[in-house]
Length: 359
Image (cartoon, rainbow, N blue to C red; front, side):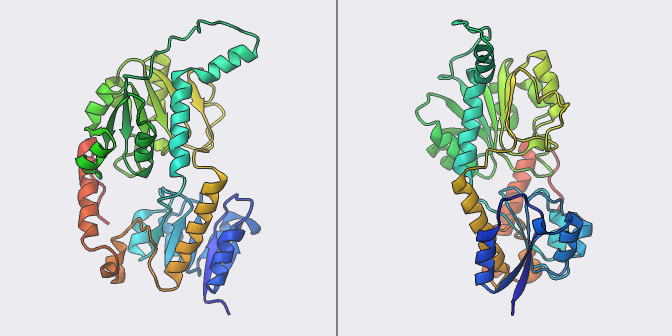
């Protein structure tokens, strides 16, 4: 007899065999939403599940109120912005996520987009493939060495980017209130506020989480304060950047180029000015992917669901204050909640926006 039920909401993966095996070995029963006729049918199955695994499906307060048995919602990914944070916390449901997977892949992809923008790789390829040849390219290019790169976020991926750039003769700036200055200094990174990062960077790369206080963190004001000819890279979350403002700045020439893997609405609309812009390089939210990262993701998701359903706590909890509601905070990290709130407040202060309301 199965001890607990796990529902995997529609996901689009070729297979969920690996996570299903982990769950079944622990005594769980799995319902795969891709085998059901609709997302609505999968959500109905989730109403009596102890664990829900979600990739894309937005989980609203209305959905979460119907999850009467749920202990944990585990997101296939690092971000968890499609899960209503406040509603899950109020319902006493843990939000799990995979904080350590695809770090190398996303950092590498960010650098690939940066280099492609700096060296005008896509346009040059198209010109040569069409029969052109010009040993003095028509687009003016600058030397990368000696310039300044601003990292918006110095978490696992931002730090991986900084490490990969060691020896490239770049000045590295970062905005991240979560990171002590001495840790940044060990990476050769100088911590600054957002206005300083915008004003002094030749290139800006986004690596922040999407939170209420980071939505449109880079908007018209920030873009206007950047150097003429700045290049913007985003492999984090699309809504960190105001796309309308970015399109305007690209059209004016103030932003020289952008490398984008993520967008405010996905898939990117066919008529978006960013899709075919000659100075924008796009990929389809693919920075996370390698066969290795996919295996890590599926293993992590399955194991986190099992931990929560068999009486333990997941390794990565996005809403740690829910542990107070569950009477289990003492089992996790002492004083973490106060530190977490202080860091969120510091982030809001540095970004010049109101902090996220308390749950």
